[in-house]
Amino acid sequence: MKKTLLVLSFASVFSFAHSQILTPRQLFPGLFEAVQLSDIFPDSKTFVDAMAKTDPAIIMKAYNEQKGQPGFDLKKFVFENFAIPGAHNGGFQSDISAGILKHIDTLWQVLYRRHDTVSKYSSLLPLPNDFIVPGGRFRETYYWDSYFTMLGLQESHKTAIIQNMIGNFAFMLDKYGFIPNGTRTYYLTRSQPPFFSMMLDLLAKDDGEKVMVKYQPELLKEYAYWMQGAGKLKPGQAYRNVVKMPGGEILNRYWDESDKPREESFKKDSDAAKLTKQNPAEFYRNIRAAAESGWDFSSRWMDTTGKLETIRTTFIIPVDLNCLMYHLELSVAKSYQLQGNETKYKLYLTKAILRKKAILKYSWSEKDGWFMDYDWKLKRTTPAQTLAGAFPLEFKIADKRQAEKVALALKTKFLKPGGLVTTFKRTGQQWDSPNAWAPLQYIAIDGLNNYHQNSLARSIAINWIRTNIDVFNNTGKLMEKYNVLDTGLKAGGGEYPLQDGFGWTNGVLLNLLNHYHIDQL
Image (cartoon, rainbow, N blue to C red; front, side, top):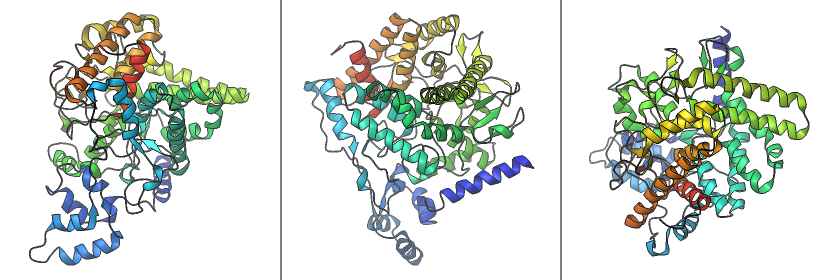
């Protein structure tokens, strides 16, 4: 009974908090489904990002009056009533001859967005400060992307933009109680990997440790969001983002408040649900939870077949998420230490110490010499060996022997001609082989340097930098992801075409170029 009350209580609060914020599906019932299940737009994100030209109620009245009439043209109706988003940087032309550093510097301007251009008829969430977007189809701020973008902004001495973006995240924590996946109304049911405390570490390099105290209220809100309901669980129970483990430890998982198809991938989710043995609500929840992870999609969330219909994200304790939560706990502790609050400092430090022990207990696989995700339903590590296992090195959770084993696996299994591959499975999903992603390269390289594995870190960095520069010299673009096995081929998979721009690629690349003092290869 108590657990039921807890669920109802939070659901009521959540519903009330967002009752005035309607998504495209809520604003345009019937019309939304008709458009998203049609072939008007190849990308489902196009319509949910479109801007209504007038009050949605007027559009819906016209639609309901006209839809049954002979010769009604849905596509014509949509184009008459909505401003369809195009590529914001469509007119930008790269100058390959100017080199990669000049290109990245120019891209900061191309990817820059003003905060005061949001229409009340748009799905964009209003923000108090200007910001950087990833690029391509991603026309809004994304949570975890932004940290890796900031790595490059810092190298470019653009501290003011970092301050603005962190200010936006703090604003969202104050307004919504969490940082959404992205700044769109349809993302208000989930977050993304919690990098806010890492962002503050970055800013502290420029502004000093006072930022930890300044943003302490928001750090606490971030922590409260991810830990909601933890105190009322019994071992083997889960609620939202928390799971109580068999030994009584609290660890985190990915979760989404909704169990409906994602609005931005409505048709793909609806079609995929026809193939699964799960009930639709459970399947959609697992799909959405994977979207919260940022790894949408990967065999790490699936059974050994690697098929999307077997996705079981909510049953999995991700090693990378819990490393980030460990850092968040340490950051809260540090903020209290800076205030001279010894009691609260020790409280959060203890939480971090207990989480570290739990990560080592449940995620370390001696057999694999790797940190694995843990299936809390099956009470065993998952079979998928993924690059997420490098996170305990980034956060100095591994002991020396474990770090050496992880380094060996990175060198002998993950390192390919173009960089570190994400997983070993070829499933057609974008977070699987042969694809590689900038944030995971950075985490692994930085983590190896923490354990004095400098030579291997440099080898990985050189391979990755060369891949980025080769593709740039051939195409004039910096991509969202790269094929690191067949470096002459484009990366593939995923729900949309390969995107260029690209915020986190630019940020990580510039950081590595400067760290390793490389101009060109």
